[in-house]
Amino acid sequence: METIKIECIEEYVGQRIDKILVKVMDGYSRTQVQLLIQNKHIEVNGKIVKASYKLEENDVIIVHIPEPENTDIVAEDIPLDIVYEDSDMIVVLKPTGMIVHPSAGIYQGTLVNALLYHCQDLSGINGVNRPGIVHRIDKETSGLLMVAKNDMAHQSLSEQLQEHTVIRRYYALVHGLIPHEFGRIEAPIGRDIKDRQKMCCTDKNAKEAITNFKVIERFKDMTLVECRLETGRTHQIRVHMQYIGHPVYGDPQYGLRRDDTTYGQYLHAKILGFVHPRTKEEMYFDSELPEFFEKKLEELREEMK
Image (cartoon, rainbow, N blue to C red; front, top):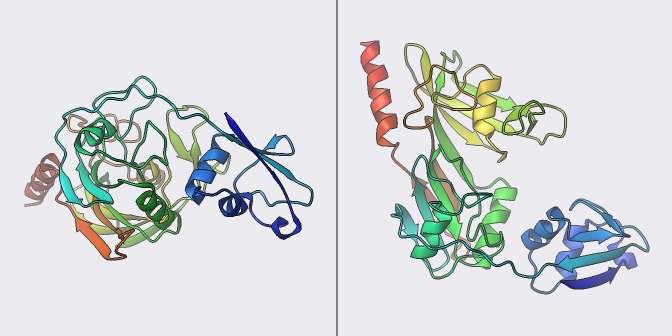
């Protein structure tokens, strides 16, 4: 493991450590530096710090650069629904039931396995288990995802996500009738202390989470809504809709026990918009709902007649 030592000089004092390290570490993007911090490879005066840590006089920064990891993740000939592709990036339509990237005990059948077969190159910023993955959606959620083929594209798309300029709109079928046309949910999300597999709205060890929604269509006892994310917390829409008493239909964790979960949850990442990392062109994609989702809507419309 390579070690880099950096001493804090006067001009660094009062500035965030991640911003300074980007300046002094040649070839490292802010995203890469933040990942090193998150993985506890950076310490100040012998202590682990956060990316927001502001440097003080006489601070000594030690950066541990880990050796590249070997991976057993193999390319698999899994069909991909590619909406857009060029030399820098891909936009794919992920089906319900597919996991985005490998994790503990799961090394096959993921979107990453399919991408490795399709592409010769993917960005390496997120490590060997998540090559090219800029953002993700849950296994049972379908919809649009952007994937980076190189680190330049990855950094640009990641920064757009951090700056909340990426357009992400989801369609969700939720329980109950929402009486108002628009809503804004501002409730921090953190890990559920009673069930570590779930998230919840809490003020303990939580992060800011904001979801905006508007009603698209009302049925007998359900509502179709469009949700727009301002933040990207784990299970955000699912947790927020449950929090206001309108859980997503078919959600195995936050929905109702009587829900039919045969096809997965009725949540679809329908619209994705961003600025192309190289051409700076505004890109905008609008996808069709999955067949099972559309079929359910038709059934609900028939019940209204």
